[in-house]
Length: 413
Ligand code: ATP
Ligand code: MG
Image (cartoon, rainbow, N blue to C red; front, side, top):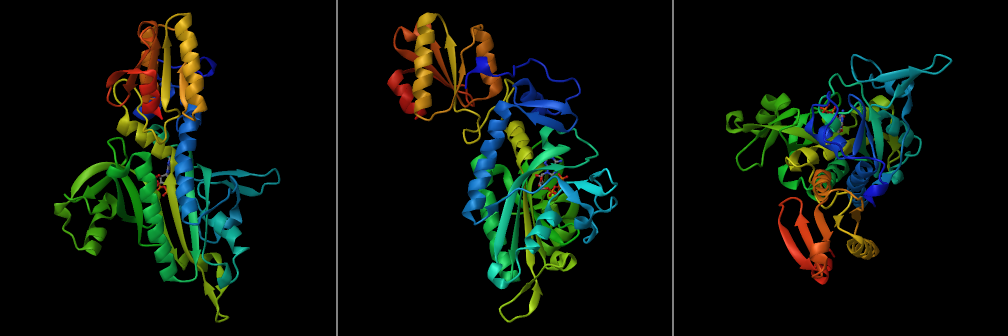
């Protein structure tokens, strides 16, 4: 990828109404475009990051047998009426619309009922179970406040997985497997050390749920954690949850955090409401055990920005960076030829390179490389090139080394 060919440009300023650090930096560095409050488009660099996050989640969901599909943004009113969730008092984030003949439609704020309604058409017998399906889809929510940048969008990408089982035990077993898969996801995003599985409220179908909360100053939630960090409870259920866990709430410390995932066991309550039954091996009709599992893909991207960025700009963990290397070319014709060759060589090796091939001042190029947050910067300059050397800088630490070409290739391989 050559910077000269990217249609986005870096900028020294963000829109005046943008107060969230994550969105300010992502806009300035050319990763997102703000359409309006809480609504962001992802430009080529930003899309790469999103796709990298999705790919990690996809690999982990496939590894536990999830089948990927994609549902629709337009939904039927009847789909939600059965569970009482068409009602605007019960679900206060609905965007709704109408067909020309006045038929009510919902714009997907969630796909829980929609996916389950579809599954009901296929799952009839114990032989069809267990099964699990997932998707990456845009959710539309009429959020009251949208001041956290991409961490709280009115349009955002979620990964949602649903599992269907014949028994409570089978659901419990799978639920634990999902927890482990989620932990691997957050680990791979570079959020492993700061993300906790917490006790949270369960919503309308279950008393408690589990949330994945990442400690983050820009988060909107408050988490209570113990000293050795084996217990984490959401503020909203603190009394109930500490009673359930048998811990003294005064021993827990409050920290700010962001909900990056939420998983629920519905048991059979929801399937009974939605009329989802299967015929068991004994010939008896029984309600299906259900669980659902979400990860806020775009919120994860925002949290990573908030946690890693410094005063110079973004810093991406290698696992989700839009490129591994930012190749900066400084100097005349020989430097150009050398940098072009290096770009080709690295690209051929499968190393993703963002090549700053613009005729800009060195200072501006370095500042952009820092703002864009690519993990490693390689500089080709006339002065070093004469000695067959390159400058190699780690974005996160600022540590610079002067390397020969062979040393450089070895480092980046
Ligand atoms: P919140 O309490 O933050 O409003 P929620 O509990 O309503 O979130 P869920 O329905 O549990 O959200 O959605 C699953 C995941 O999707 C959340 O854990 C979060 O990571 C993400 N998410 C929810 N709302 C948003 C939003 N408006 N913008 C970006 N991500 C979101
Ligand atoms: Mg939630």
